[in-house]
Amino acid sequence: MNALHRLALALAPLALIAAAPAGPAPAQVDAVLLKAYGGYKSDADNGPADWQKPVYSAEVTTLIKTWDKHTGENLTALSDYSWFCDCQDWDAQKFRWTRLSLRSLGPNRAEVKVRVNAGWGSASLQRLILVRQGGRWLIDDLFSDSVPTGIKATLRQELKEKPGE
Image (cartoon, rainbow, N blue to C red; front, side, top):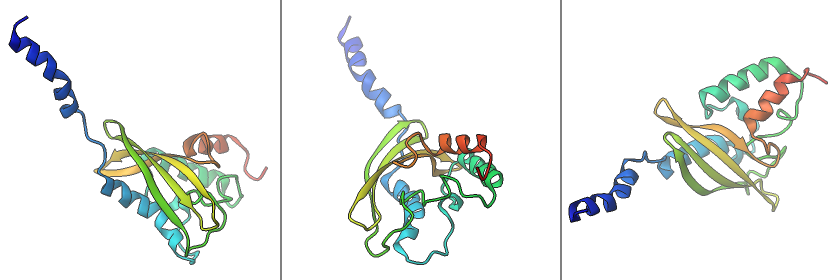
């Protein structure tokens, strides 16, 4: 093997890294997180429910619409708390969210971990899977203490149940 071949082999991994699609820029992720978590900085309870926020992928949006129609006015495990604070109540003056990590999961997919403090001195960790659709980064799944299997799996489970029981 000549020197040129050895050089080409040595540089091949760098070419693959350079060709790999970049994940979202932190500012793009923070914009989505602000839409998801920003409303908790206010005591006003007149904003949309977490499942009504325009932050979800097409698949999750469809699941939510089907779930909302299926459950109607009945309370379920998912409609009994706020998804992004993982709580039923929060202190708007002390509420904080912090992006802990961001990593690419491949083309147009990323994972972000967030620490959420509802203001009562304790924090919860959330893991969000993001997808790029229509030029925007959107939430494709959410994992927390309340939905350890993810919001998509929990929505699908509640769709199998009879509302009100």
